[in-house]
Length: 367
Image: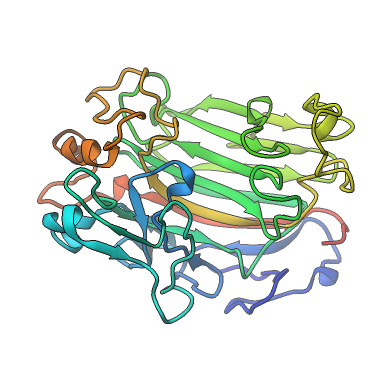
């Protein structure tokens, strides 16, 4: 069932029940709960972009119910081939235009890295995979509390699922100055060294400006208790307060993020740079509202799929290749069967499946 208690912290209106923060009289108080009885477009906005998060990923994010849909109280984000939507010749000659005209769900949401319009060529094809990225950006964001997500990771080579959060206002400046909180990222490969679907990671990104990102001080890798995060549903949780963040997998504490005095001193930054968090609290930049993102990416050249890690089948592109999109597509005889269920259909086992997303207010803290 859908939750009793949804809290609207930013502008807009949700189709579900709403309760004001001051109405939480006992704690913990459930303030956001989606159990995906249906796909609530008032709560979740589909991003439309090819920008790939700066990683030159191979997917285009679309709003299409063959890619993102609910069934049996589960959200599915399933990859699909662009060539099945258009045709194969389109990849090397067509224009993929996402600019749109009709508002939310139809208008490009990310123009960076040629994210709204690309035209394919023989060596620089347009994004060969369609997927989805859903966010609560305009409808729900929160500061401090507990977020818990129960999900099953996808099985399939070069799939990159993520459940994470970004700042609503970017109050301290562009990424990573305003922070990023990753509940989980994973890879879909069965055979990719020790970082395939048996592994997952949780990370906090922060730094005064790009490329100074001190995420290596606040990241953890772990393995699934049942051998693979693609075998069954697991639960990821973050307890986020004004003094620390605790990350849990299946109720097991895997990482505590406590910067001590503040993140500036924690990073040992001294006076060599200007401190964007000087006016913030101890947890700055994580003392502001963040919104929730669910997405399934594919590949990319940003390094999340390292060239040096042995894979079976072999990785079809190099992260330094000037035609990585084409190299990936030309290797589909190896990776596509790991996504499919036969008869040319992509299996729901290749989908990121989300059972629920819940957020609690844990104490009487001003939002």
